Structures are given as C-alpha cells and as structure tokens.
Length: 465
Ligand code: F0G
Image 1: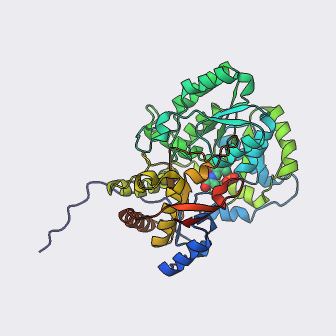
Image 2: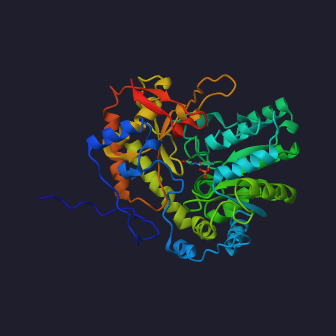
Image 3: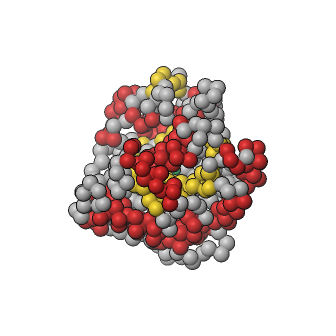
C-alpha cells in the first residue's frame, strides 16, 4: 500500500484577490498556429491575439483592474479642463512617488518625448543603466546620444548579482569627465532595468548616483515604470531594508531623483496612461506647455478622466506589500521551475518577466540569424504561448554606421501580466518551454525580409533559413 506523503514543512501563500470576471481564451491546433506564425512573418508582435492561448508578450497595459478601479471608471469626470480625476492622480503621485508636479501623457513614450525635447540639445550625451527601446529613440530624435553605464554583470545572464541594474559609478564618472557636465542634461536611471532582465537598482547605488551627479549639477531622471517592483527587491535583498514597507522604500528612492517618466501601463495597474513628474517648477511650466502640442491639455494629456481615476486607484493598490509580493512571487515561481530543469534563463529572476537565454539555448545559431526571434516563434508553435524577442532585433541599427547593434544579451521575454494568469497557466508555460528546449538541436535560424526604420522589432518580418 502507498505511504501517505509527509506533512508539509512550509506554508503556501496565494494571491490577495479572487476572480470576479473571466475572459475566455482560445486553444488552437498546431496547424492553425503554423498558419498564424507564417502570416505574422515569424514575429509574435504581428500575431492576432485571438490566435494566442497564454499571452506573455508584455506586462504593458495587460493587467487586470480591481473592482475599485472599475468602479472608479464610472466616476470619470470628462471635462476638457480641470477634471477632478486629474487631481486624484496628482495627489496619488505626490503621496506615493513624492514628486511635486505631474504632466499626464497618453503612455510612457509620450513622457519620454516631452522630457527629451525639453532637456536634450543636439550633441548632448545621456548616460543610462542600459538602453530601453523607446527611451533611447526619443533621446536620439532630440539629437542626443545614449551611453550605457550599467555594471558589467548586467550583460551576463548567469551572474547572480542581486542588483544587476546598478550604475557603474566609475563608468559614469568617466563619461562625465570625457564629455563635461554641460553636455549631460540628465542621467537616465531605469528601475527596474527591463532590457537586463527586470533587474533592480539598490538604494545605495541610487544614493551614490545622486551624490556624484549633484557634484556636477547634473539632474537624475528615473524611468519609474517598474519602480514599485524595484522597491520590493530592495526590501528583499538590501541590507537594512527588510521589514520596511515597499511604499516607504519607493518614496525614498524617488527622493534621490529630480523627476521621472512613467508608463502607467505597468506598475500602476492600468491599460493605458502615463506621466512625467518633476520637482522643478520652471521645467514643469515648459513641460505643461509642450504637452498641449503633442498629447492634450495639461490636465488630461491624452487620457480620459476615467483612465486617470483608474490609475490613481491603481497606484495605491500597486504599493501594497501583499500585492507586490504575489506579483513578483508568480514570476519567480515560473523562473525557478525552469532553473530547476536546467533551462538557461537570466538570473536572478527579474520583477516582471522570465528571460530565456536564447544565445545559450540555440548555441548553434549566429546572432544575425535571430535566435531569440526564432525561439519566441517556436514557443508559439508548440503551445500558443506568446513571448517577445529582446535581442538583436530589438537593439536595432547604429544610426552612425547603419550596422546591426549586437547586444550581448539575446533573450526571449516571458512577461507576466499583473493579476491575470494562474499558477496552472505558469505550469503550462514552463512545460512548453521545456518541450521547445528539448528540440533545440535542429532548429534553423531566420532571415529578415522586411525591416521598418524605427523600432523595427514591432513590425519586422522574417522567413526561416
Ligand atoms: N520604459 C520602460 C522601462 C518600458 O518598459 C516601457 C514600455 C516604456 C518606457 C515605454 O512606455 O509603452 O507606455 O510608451 N515597455 C513595454 C514593454 C512596451 O513591453 O516592455 P509605453
């Protein structure tokens, strides 16, 4: 007779919510997926979401809103000017992020556009802890050049450094010495660092960046898109921070910067929206004037009143410790499962996604045969799980030479939307990754047959070799 299993010696935890509404998803056959990926030019961005089973393309705008947020949608004040929801949003940003002024935008890149136009002059240099696609493009369109000053560990998927998002302080000092502070309008501090695998920046590092830049009169602007997730990692990993509320850590982190750009579609738990924030009143005046040209009046910036209300409420929910623990806990659950099976992923597991190391998985493919692009396509073919390339396609071309940029990281991102999928979904994803991994040997590469000028990863098309 079978012996009963031993009683558990640890206690499980679960999400601090239950499901009220469900959205059906469609299971497809291998033949249907085969046709769909061909039609999409082997680019998961070009798939129709109706053909996707579990959608891990992005955590951007894909969160499930709470009943309180949906109730807030009914309280939208759609006045053209001075909507009460704008003031709720402003109050929430002041209370939880601590910045004095906010300029609403339709999403994060709207804020990046305004900030870049205001602060960057042609010939300027913007140091940052690794590039992000839209951020760097707006810096370049304003005439600036991005310079990467992230620590070297960030470029090594196997390094288990607890704060792989940190700025390399000596590198930053060298960039300042080389170009002079007058050519550096601000340092761009991403927290967490998306392209490095959702890796955090420590409070200690942010303080040191503050100290160094203050000496030279250089501003620090944060990309606060996932700063709550960053604050959670500080709480978990940084000496002396355990037991502090995530909200308190977030506010201290923000206090080390002069302002931020924000994609509300991530941490703040909404489907659309963003903002630019700052403490300098003159800068605010310039930004609130320019936003009228590109986004909308300075009290809505491209958002409906109801969307601003949902974001104000989402901000409050996003900084609760039990929310953020469950959110990142789910990402870690998937990541540790894959690590347990020996599948190469970026370590440590990041805040919003698990990143597969496509360079290690398809070690027979040269980078200009787009291994990560192919890995994302294979995963879709296997199970209908949609992921995203974050490698050579995303890196684009060097504007000066026109050549591909060859990033050291060639990754596929399994991005987990907030409050959307269950642990069972994560198991299905993990098993599909394992299946694709076991068939890695003979997988061919791709060639690019259509290449758009800007942010090519969104719309490029490929064919198998
Ligand atoms: N900054 C970071 C770190 C981001 O991840 C994003 C968007 C943006 C800025 C731009 O914000 O999309 O609201 O205009 N990231 C999405 C992603 C697209 O899938 O990682 P946006």
